[in-house]
Image: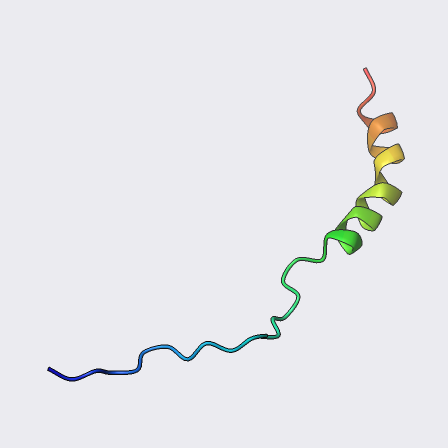
Length: 41
């Protein structure tokens, strides 16, 4: 039987930003009034 190292734990990692919630919110916030008026019944 032998031991094999499979994972090395590090105290901190850097991940790329995957979701740009603020950018999407700003784009929709500017378009929202027009969408409301256009779809008003």
